[in-house]
Picture 1 (tube, rainbow, N blue to C red):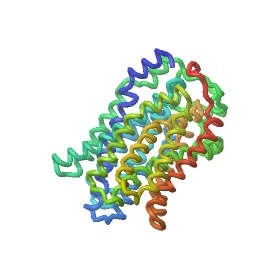
Picture 2 (tube, one colour):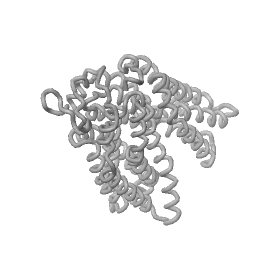
Picture 3 (tube, one colour):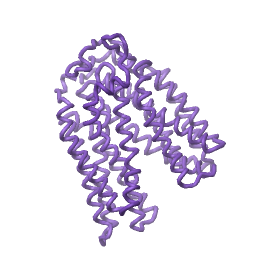
Picture 4 (cartoon, rainbow, N blue to C red):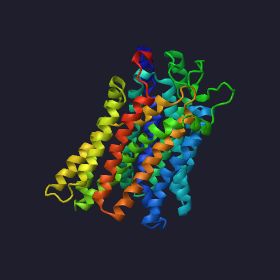
Length: 432
């Protein structure tokens, strides 16, 4: 990346990363309270869990339509529309008179989160040069993690001050209003980066080599030679090889990440630890995770994608496998804390990897439809893992289920080792 391009990226950081932080901050504030609101409306534990899962289901269902929308309207307008629709979802969340309204509201928020995330991903894919791409996307992932990390604390403070769960929803609404105003009224980084930076090189990709750099907003829909934007399903068929290979490896990483959020609390409970100790262990692991998010981007840009993704998958896979054999040891609590830290390091090293790999293999001229499919695969991995873990634990033991998550991690490492060199061509930073 040229000095000019890096300077512009830093100068527009509030416009590029600010909306992501705002959206994630509000979302993080309401997520822990969704089951509570559901219970107040009469839901049992199973129904409350189902309603909470509507956020993930909405995100899964929203990725492909979001890819279609970004390809035709551009990322800026898509983010604005998603923000306004999310406001309706938040209003439903705060004022829900019935469980079905609450479930629909959470589903809408999930769909809007998918559209918001894909729009920013598509923008970064088309406008950040290759030599700085991984660091820029690691910062994007870190922005999301920051919001999701701080959001629950904000929600807890608001709940303590007001005593009303709806206060977190109204906080989310304020974040969304600020986000929409920033996106629609602030300086457009898409246009300014076109004017002030060296365009992304369009070589080395059969899907992108036919497009000339016109200086227009690429995410507004570059047309193919037949005069029509690439359709979502046509893009899926055209890129089925990379989606069915590298995409599945990426889904395994998402699965291991999601499993971590389920395994750690349940393992602490099975050891008889109190809630404060479990929270402390998970909090330390999360802090390590967050502290390493930019390091992942530096490693990927300087040494290649495998140097970040392989250590990440090996640490998490081996961490889960080792944890599975420590339950009945004398120092089981110590092993729990130590391996939680190891898994936190692995997760921290994976920050931005899925975003970066998706950007690397996406068609350079019109990435949004492809990224919709890519993000659907990775989100599906994250959605399936907790269900798979719970099912294995139900028919066997918690240790066997934890070991199964470790096996998925190691299988994913093999997949990355096989397919990253095949589909991701390493080019010198100067070509970015």
